[in-house]
Length: 271
Length: 88
Image 1 (cartoon, each protein chain N blue to C red):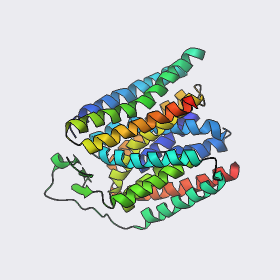
Image 2 (tube, chains in turn yellow, cyan):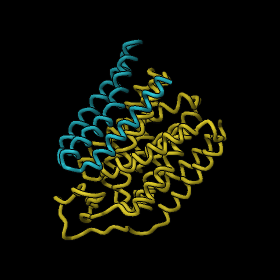
Image 3 (cartoon, chains in turn red, cyan):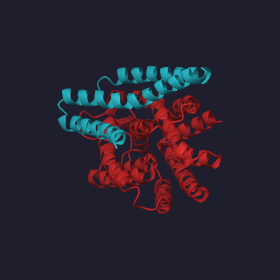
Image 4 (tube, each protein chain N blue to C red):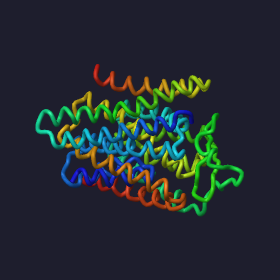
């Protein structure tokens, strides 16, 4: 069963660019696992999904590594601050706040009509990928090659720092907030934002799993099933993300964010 | 990005290796299965860190020293997290 749950969480997490642990962990808690045991399993699903999706996301020129590194550096500093403050803030309050933020992000993603970035007829397949300088690039939308450039970097990175604090406080990857911030604040196309998040949450999961391994909190009997299922899910999710046009991806993200907020509230009630 | 295709191929091979390792861990009894699971988890932790390290090296060679510095700083923050938990 955990393999199937890992498959579903990784497939949805990669396709929507939200990581997936925030979907998997509440479900595991609902079916009887303790939150302490469920958290590392959720991060395994995120890490495995990201690893399986990475070849497709990098090979198609969708994921932007420099953007991911810059975004993650801000979030990592925030996560360190959040982890240090973790014992001083009531967790219940944070979970409810996270659910509300996810809901706001869902509305922001779902309410916007059309696409912001349009194909440039002067660009061809050779232009797809990261630009040699800056947080810019181009991706193949299916209707043509679309150029983009990350904007409002200061606001975006500031918000990523806040997401990092929230992630550190609550023990989540924060992936479900990184994609909407990149898309709606930094004006990066949602497909690029989702692919970049799917790539960098592997890093988030690795750093957290390292801590869990050192703490001895990893269940080595359940891990292989979760990892195998999530690796398969990551491949499926990446293929879906590459093939779907931007508007359905944004709609999917919106639906997943609503599911995330419900899952967070359910987790809070169950605990 | 230069080397992106090679990196994608390397990651695909790593993912297949992790998948085979996870299936072997499921099939292997007792301690052998748990040892294999530990190896698979080591791959999950190590692969993204290696990708970040390779990116830092490539960006430094391309003269994008600011980006390379951010990547190295990120690696240090992640490494320090693990070390601090182990020590404390």
